[in-house]
Length: 279
Image (tube, rainbow, N blue to C red; front, top):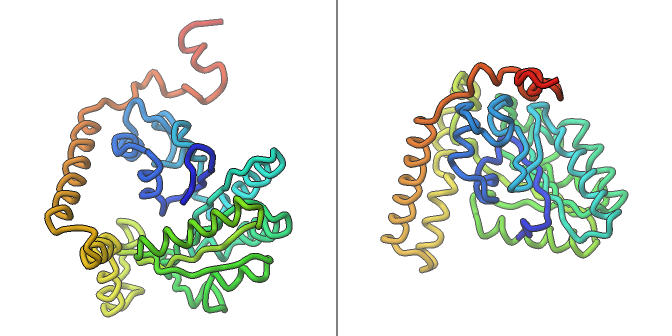
């Protein structure tokens, strides 16, 4: 749907699968999670996977909710001023949709018809706050009309449908017709974090229904039903994915942590020179 050779991607902490799809290696992700020596994005200093990835053209992102949206609007504006046909796609969640940064970015993008796609992954919970307590309208996508561009809803567990709406939005932006807001309905299959107990704010029925919308299972079932994937091929794909993850885990587990002598590297511009005794 996009062209990684020229398009730009601003992700956040729901987008680890997008990072993999764009070319981030499992070992690189695990080094970031485990703060191992040689970690590419931040020299093992930043929160996991929050640093930029120069090879894949991923931008830094922050835990401050929605800050990536104005940044993405700026990237798209720069491309427009340069006369480039590159498109920027920025990802965010339903909680971020309630932030002022989101309004400002979409308003600016609509006014200037920027080549940008706003992609909202709506899992209906901003940590523990349900969607009904976040917004008074029925959908995030319905807000797009107020900014002067289209908003579309899609089942986020349907890979083919997501691809189709994303391709259409990217094509529209590349043609100079401006932004699109995509709202993908997804499920958060686990609690927000390891110290979160989602049974305190989600009913047992809700959790049971949610578990049936696993996009990996749904994709396998859809492809097999359409005759595009056999049971043997499906099992082989899962086995290879498990092998790849296990190999990456074993590799990174065996790697060292950064030495104490690197503690002040990258703190100031001359810290490495001071460490090495260079005047």
